[in-house]
Length: 208
Image (cartoon, rainbow, N blue to C red; front, side):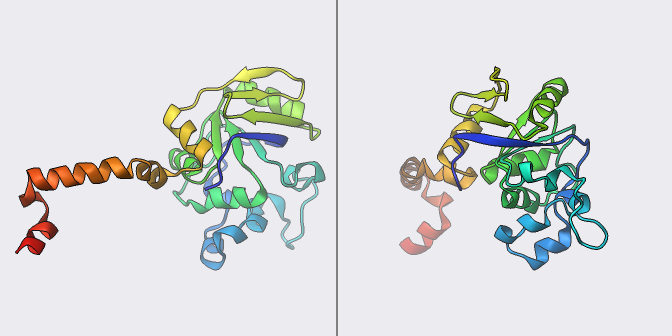
């Protein structure tokens, strides 16, 4: 997983509430393409017209926001299904950070498992950032410092769970975090085998 430390760039203001995972990526795309091929199909329902051409009125198609690393959204972003492919599709567009007042719970957790930073901020703050970024001005999200720098230079802090912050900084998902303690786990297993051999069937079979 790619570590997340600091991202600077355009922030696409997609200020719609309740954008669900089916809007982010249609289910049939997940059965036809690999995770690193999903970017062109992200937000199809918003970006494309009925004939398959790009809708120039969609903010996602504007040149200033192509490959924007930050996405600003309204309430309940990523609601709906549990498909992890929604996060993969965003990553395919170049998105590394999503800022919204609230998220679908599973989508929120899937972000951390794939190196994308989801940040919850009050709607007034998200709207203020969206207004400043509407012309393509760059903002900065610094996970190390836990701050957001708006295009006008204003710096504001954000809260994040310390364990999840550490995992993103080091590019670790849940398995990676567990393996950091591999030596401790193996030592505990060895001690427990000696203390409770009956609890380790494989060891009992080998001994027999």
